[in-house]
Image 1: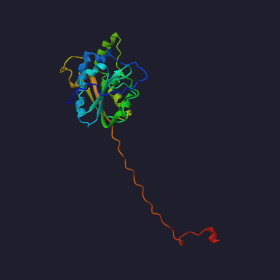
Image 2 (image 1 turned 135 degrees about the vertical axis):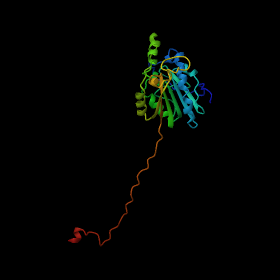
Image 3 (image 1 turned 90 degrees about the vertical axis):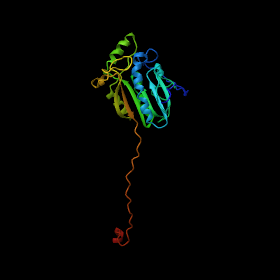
Image 4 (image 1 turned 30 degrees about the vertical axis):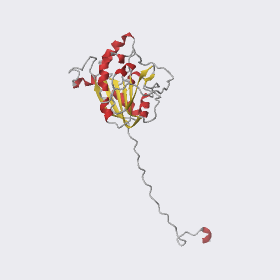
Length: 253
């Protein structure tokens, strides 16, 4: 098991031009202790996917700075960790969500943990696709809009905290398809409502699966396949002898 990511090793800075209305800073619902149990359950799924990737890099994108305290096991991959901050990303690198400062196909694994719940989706998913290497995997964690967790979040936000914009798994799948990613599976995670410790047996009933707090949408970036061109048939060039040639009108005259 590899060491937790400590957020060091990257010093490049790419300024983002504008500030958007998003959930950021300590006043984020994703910074509450009650949701930390769900976030840890989600991050426990990362190690399995990281172990399947060859040597390379991993990008971890989270909803707020407080989530950086949660350990992420990316195994042998070298990781970069950023979080939503003032309409863009802070952490190892500062940048705009729609202008990531990495070259194409830079990462073998991309983990987006509720970043899509707090940031505008325009351009963000396309940028994740661009920096994902062919054959790499995207782990898209998002809140389940049918879960009682949303009612709990509305109650917590009564003091004015911004609410996340939860998207149904089918809508998220279509968004990834438009970005040229191939969805592989959807898994529902966590309990049906916030609680400390391990979810009870009631939360684990299969009939209640669609009501769990979050879902994981796994998608892959397909490798570019070269399609062989159909060979063009060679045409034999024939020379017509003088005796078979048609005489011109002047010769016939």
